[in-house]
Image 1 (cartoon, rainbow, N blue to C red):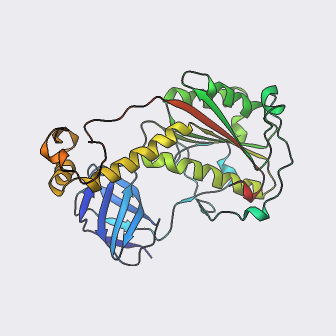
Image 2 (cartoon, helix red, strand yellow):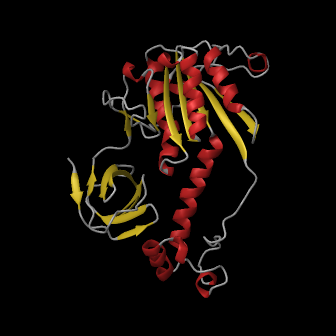
Image 3 (spheres, rainbow, N blue to C red):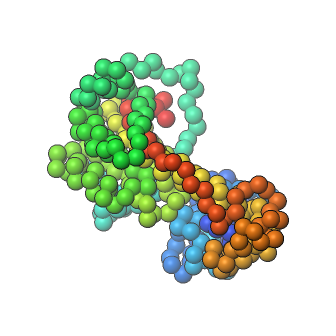
Length: 316
């Protein structure tokens, strides 16, 4: 049963806080704002106080916005009609095709007992000697591919997808530039492999939370195909963007909780342009040793991709 509340107690960053009963952890909700409706997920429970992460951000959401709890966690559709389609990181159609709502499947299910796993023994040939001979890709195993910035790792992934002896190809793109998305789609289409491929693409312009959902959705769909006896190859790129999304969400939550009440209220109402400087008394009065939001940290960037062969439920 869906429940609707129209009072939001606090809006901080992409997190809203309100009071509601009979709400479960990780339950989905829809939040109505001036820019439309956006999905949100329960990330914290404390009595009747509920904190939700809004996927599209809280811009345009007021304290009297309608929040409708859907009564179920994040799910993804499963159907043979997924083949040849392109979706966003949250499973919405990106190719202007009709939405698919058949067989809703929960993502992020319980872990498989390691003692019950089938010993990996079926090799998947990729046609790349350095992989087939020295770092063999085997069903129900993961193969990380590390690369420094600037190396053509997208071309390598596309070659693995085209040459691998599998039935279905799933590509989970995280934080991709639009050119990279068009490269993967164009390559698969030109080589006639798009009809047996499913693409879940999160671009750099999409909400950050969707980046964290892309691997779970791709692996949930791959698991269902594997249960039907299909040989499935899952390609995930770029794991560095996935780590950046984790850092962005965690830093935002920690910084918001550590600011004094007046500073936190100023951030919510006027945005980052009015934040105090690092040397101001408000920043010196912070209660935690987190970096001031006006002085972002920089670090060298590397890239990482991952190829996963799925043939059984233990692949996740």
